[in-house]
Image (cartoon, rainbow, N blue to C red; front, side):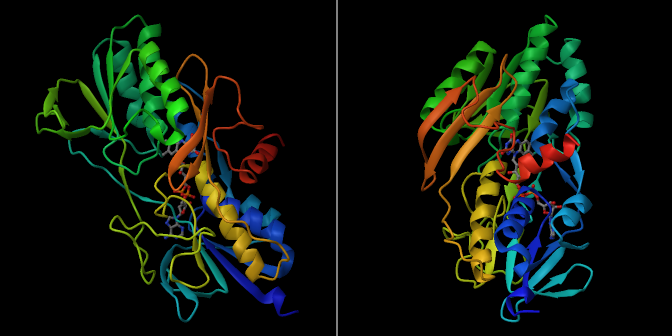
Amino acid sequence: MSQQAAFRAVIAGGGVAALEAALTLRYLAGERARITLLTSAEEFVYRAQAVREPFAGPVARRHPLARLVDDLNLEHHRAGLASVEIDARTVTTDTGDLLEFDALLLAVGARQQPRFRHALNLDDRNLDEQLHGLIQDVEAGISRRLAFVIPSEPSWPLPIYELALQTARRAYEMGVDVHVTIITPEPAPLAVFGAAASTAVVKLLADSRVTTLTRSSAAVTDDGQLLVHPADRVLRVDRIVALPELYGPLLKGVPGADDRGFLPVDGHCAVRGVERVFAAGDLTSFPIKHGGLAAQQAQAAAEAIAVLAGAQIDAQPLRPTIQGLLIGGPRPLYLRARLTDGVATDSEASEEPLWSDARKLAAPRLAPYLDAIDQG
Ligand SMILES: Cc1cc2nc3c(=O)[nH]c(=O)nc-3n(C[C@H](O)[C@H](O)[C@H](O)COP(=O)(O)OP(=O)(O)OC[C@H]3O[C@@H](n4cnc5c(N)ncnc54)[C@H](O)[C@@H]3O)c2cc1C
């Protein structure tokens, strides 16, 4: 076996970032790299699709990791990452095993923390069960005033809008009069997609009779009322639905996390100040948490790791573009912008697809790979 054949890449995680990285690294490095997927997850859940479930839409697709592990000739170490020993280039798993690495990609996602005691704090593993009763109450005219809250940033940009829009639409179809309000710290609805996209979203919300309070935060009083800042105004509501707050995973042995626990990375998604350790996806300090961006970060990291493994390629730094498909209106709305230093430029919105193969999850290798499996 040549020296290059022994290059050990460990990818911790089983979500978009981990799987996009595994596909990219195998493609670029071929069999030069021995790739271990370190996660106790057994399946990939297409969580972006979960927002349709409470409205009798299709169930979010699930894919066993075993298939991808097999197709890509990976090793699946069924455990969670517990700590990283940077100098020794090892990781310790939560079952006490020690894995050596030549390059490590951290892709374990964000930690979710419910913000409010007296609210329905969303858990995307369970959206149908969580929201089923609420939708029934809306249909029956029992719950007429609903608040959908983004408690803080960074957050996932799309789902609260999609749930609010679908709720308003369902009420309209049932002939029930409801007041749906979104409370968000964003400067404008879906501002991460830039000005033109946000303008289109404002129109869609107005047409759907959804009110949006931007640059706002909320507190829930003990009797279940909503106190909206900065005006300190009480919003009387029947139900409050909130996204969880997101934090970094606080991985033992990995230095440099910011005050929310997210990991700063450079243009190639290397963890700042740590050799041979990379990070991609929701756990990085990139200001936007989005599956498509997680995939682009994974690609940048995988390219840099492939070079370390001996691949003759020119690793490209991340040049992020955010692509989103907003559902809930009469037609899907495609949103896109380039991101430079976190600022959106060349913003676009259209009811026609703005990029080829437009899917809910814009992951260049993973999305078509999963579609091909679904199509048999
Ligand atoms: C309801 C909802 C709708 C969304 N809609 C969209 C959308 O339309 N488009 C879009 O692009 N994005 C969307 N997003 C955001 C998108 O899902 C996330 O940005 C994306 O999942 C982040 O990918 P990730 O790989 O960084 O993390 P995750 O998807 O969170 O994956 C993390 C993985 O790591 C594993 N893991 C956790 N801890 C450990 C550990 N210690 N060791 C090993 N493995 C571990 C987990 O089991 C999981 O497999 C949505 C999110 C939600 C919740």
